[in-house]
Length: 73
Image (cartoon, rainbow, N blue to C red; front, side, top):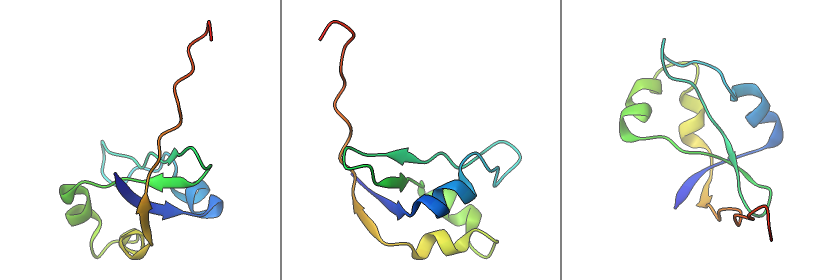
């Protein structure tokens, strides 16, 4: 799965910030400790020509999920 790659500073700037009255940015860290942002096509349309449209110019990369470790392992 591909997503937008964020620096730590960029992640801190947008994490939890609402871009509509009911939607907010939620960043996810992958197995390699890289921060990602995933946007749907509707999200992209919503942030075009707003203060957040710079996010659409971020580099994209392959997200590698962290392994799930169960409590008894």
